[in-house]
Image (cartoon, rainbow, N blue to C red; front, side, top):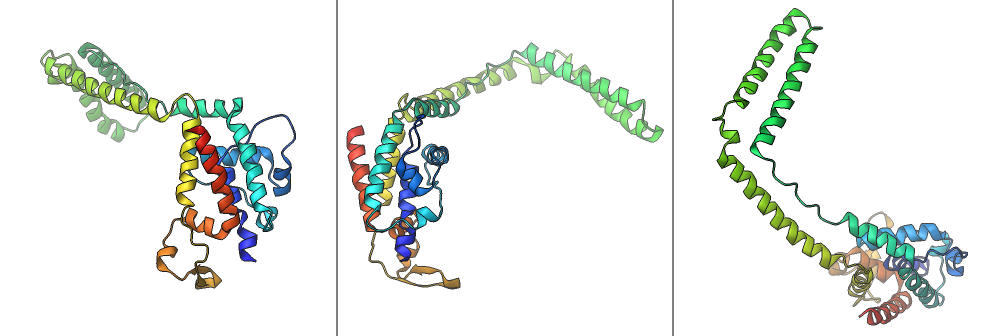
Length: 273
């Protein structure tokens, strides 16, 4: 009975593995049956797809999906999902996600004189604001702030020193070399980004299907459960208790649901390859 009530967890996971189409037509019958609004389903799916993790809704309809109905429901979900991956909305979300992940090139290095000019302007502003604020201070605080004013003036004077090492040719060379290294890193990151985020979302779909097949493989559906703390069931085998949460979710879902999901995922993956 417990397996029947929670078997739809993998169905929900499949809602994470695939995305749903965005059409003006009413939501598919299976979504109505599951009690999941189409917009909510799309949100769960996209967050899982883009984040490479499982995110799924849960309600009483899903919990009570009867045995014998799960395989056909998985096939419906898969067909509906596949249609969505070809939709303009799905591609738009993917391209936005792709652009957000694009590395940003480093800013070009500033000249020595530009660095000197900006620091001087910042110090002059700080000095002016400090002197203005002192006018409303008590005599004790004014005496304390005089040291701050003196420090700002000394720093301003040092900026005009032509021998200041902070604005030497050696420092300029260091800034240039630092920028060159930053550019090399940027080009490497850009090349990796172009590989990881091609214009088509198919690579992301393939990664997700592969992840599902890997994590749903070799599930021991005959594994023995025992009573744990607070009435919670746990695996008799310690090695099973240490399995990832997705492995345990597939176990709870049952053979019917998992095998239907794996069959559909394998067929879809073969088409993408």
